[in-house]
Image (cartoon, rainbow, N blue to C red; front, top):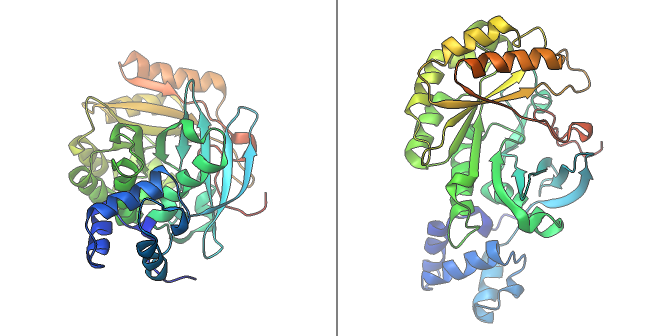
Length: 344
């Protein structure tokens, strides 16, 4: 594998340091960043805003590398899932989700996942490795270029393969490049990080960068959550919710709790009542997600009537509870179904 530094792994500040070490003016870093992210150049030869001599020097000491699109599948509802190959021939997946007037990209932050959540297909393969910043932002760059929907991607959710906060430094670097004026130029209001509940990293993220946070809750008590999500044994609900109360959401936005409804496990009326009690005093909204079944899973989706009743209990107690329609389940592109399998 090529060991030269990948310019897409650098933040603007790191790029300035890199350029300064070559005896060049710092503003050259802004030029290069625009070439990489706004013009989506994949070769130094394309960077005609800088001199040929400097381009040749850059090509000797650095590289531009991002994931390669191998395959794109389309679901019946219009959702698209992309299989991407990394430099070391590992595979990851990204999902394009259609909205009313724009598209959302769901990006992966790890190849595989180490968290072991019982309801997630990604967890079954374990963690292969963290993705580098170039491999996180590169998913968007690749799909901007390789799909007709690319120019209309307006939201980024880090809800694909992996636990973003377990790859903390690289995820924060990627967010900085997503939001940089000389990078991809996204507002921090348009980016959401999803976590299974790593308490120290949630607190640190609130200090380092202002970004939307979604927490995968999935249970109204520690006993049920311990069964579904091993992370709860280390960071139980009391600690998690205390960290969530401290988290500074951008503007007037509310922190999101994601709750996957599983038949016979966490979707009964008593479960809903326990959830109401648990979240008392928490500024939040809830995304209810019906469990997406996949081959070999021991869990089942609850009946639509049970889902509706669960939601109504929350609404009756003045919570914002949105039933999030799962998209792309017929191509294993819905929440918890990504695997990065090269052939399926």
